[in-house]
Image 1 (cartoon, rainbow, N blue to C red):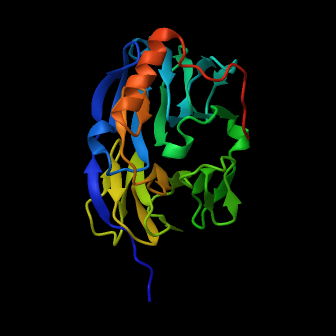
Image 2: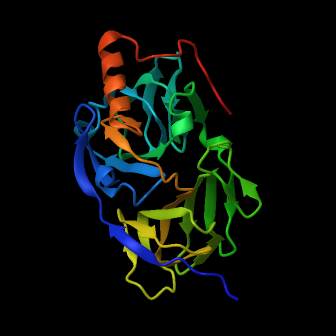
Length: 291
């Protein structure tokens, strides 16, 4: 028997959105798409050559119950949080933060020469981990392994694995895979995908066909959610392509969502908001770093 190649289930062009203190970005999916993307909650793409579109940044704000994954393609973002973590995310760097029981942080882009761009992905936490101690992983570009494809492309492996290369982000409950794939013109890319896992791809640049390669190509800025199957297949267009390929195990749990706080029940949201008002939101007071 041949492997079942994943076909497109839904396609999302991205919606212009203002977030933070006035950052202009493209939102691929969010609240309205629950539970289509389970265990993934949100994907935002930021990118502009105009500093007025991003310099307002994301001042101090809370999170609880999720993991936030910030991937900077071009530019710099200064960050800090209530656990004492501080630093700058630069070209190709990753910040993978588990907000757990509660954290307050900020992410402030710095003025860039030319394009400032990147992504933020939210990953849901299972109910049993939503009130766990927060944790933080900061990865420089050098710490994210890259491997060539057979036809001259390249795959960066943030989480999960590609062939024999394993990404540095490990021990996540939903078993995520996060790949940054670059393909040369006309190149075909394949990788196994676990049956039952949610799989999506976001086109960073260029375009590609997928599945049986007969569907209309996905283009820059588009996110494609795939149906079930054991194999992902894509073929780059005439100009080559770059895309993020992400998959993970669904949680199949109820979602209660209020801004940057994602729990399972509405009363848990009410508790979090009350704790924010009374100064009880932060449960951990010391830096916690993983990986």
